[in-house]
Amino acid sequence: MEQSITIRDTGVKITDVLDMVAKGFSYYQILLSDPRLTLADIMVTAKVAKELIDQFVTANSTISVEGSIEVIASGGRILNLSKIREEHPRAFEKWSKSEEEQLVQLFHSGKSVTEIADIHKRKRGAIRTRLRKLTLIDGGEQDDGK
Image (cartoon, rainbow, N blue to C red; front, side, top):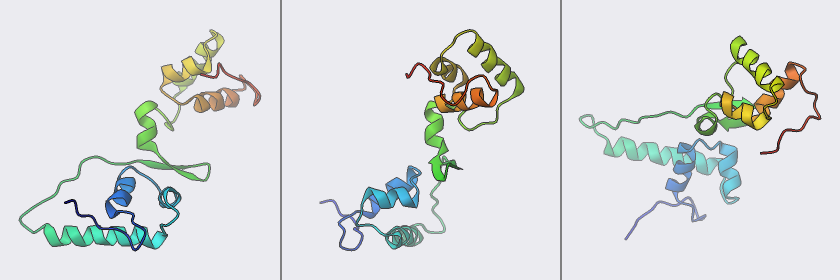
């Protein structure tokens, strides 16, 4: 029989909250995922996890954790950069001069925003923003919509 630790009377498993934390969810996103949860519930979850680790990991045993989660604040939101970069590896990276030159070249050759985004490994919105900054399009320009 599977045993689990639930948070208060919510029926939400602590492991479910820890899984969301591991995936890079913000506190706000966790709270939105289940209206029964409070910020205090998330803090208690972390406390229980720490106490379990303290209790079961002894001085002669080690737990090694690999990987990391990068986050960035953008537009008043916290974004999981690690997740975004799975699909767009250059997302939120600074533009180099040569990359900008290639962008202009691709734009003038008739490539769509989607095609340019694929080539530059960035999001379509980043391509449109850079094209506006370079005054190649105005705010009303549409791309191929893909």
